[in-house]
Image 1 (tube, rainbow, N blue to C red):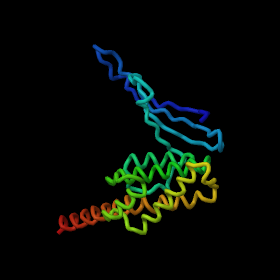
Image 2 (image 1 turned 90 degrees about the vertical axis):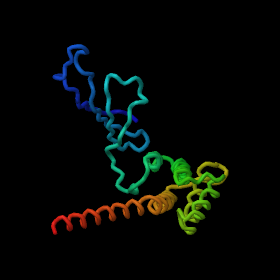
Image 3 (image 1 turned 90 degrees about the horizontal axis):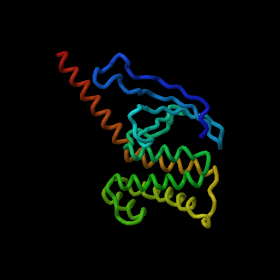
Image 4 (image 1 turned 30 degrees about the horizontal axis):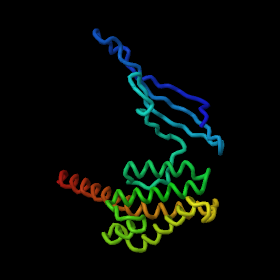
Length: 202
């Protein structure tokens, strides 16, 4: 992406001078505005920088805009990163989007400790362990099949019409496995908090 603007927020405290080591290292947050060469849409990213960094591998980018409000809640970090990677190509290449969503599904299986052979076998294993219902296995296999078409040119070509289907299939799986338990935990903790406050008052 082309960088069309950037701002540096200096966080170093020059008053924090050390008589032995001198002034503190420069550090702060960069905010960059990027333009996608494919769709011409803007993206705003943020990353922290300090002069003691040894390589660019230490830089962690965070997308501030556009915010992905449709991302299911409660996702583990690795799953979240994979989901965001797929969303970045959603409007650029449908086949790449389907492939990345299929990869996301494999990561979900691995996260739930399913390593039994092929993706179809891993999904069946999750159903056997009651991690997901059998009906959801069929949903997951549908996502897998879309990913297979995207990966193999001889299997056909996906169009933009399939994007909502792939997205809905993925979201259904993630919400069942991660979002629902996460919400249940939040509700349980909130109820405990309310009951605890009630006992304190009495």
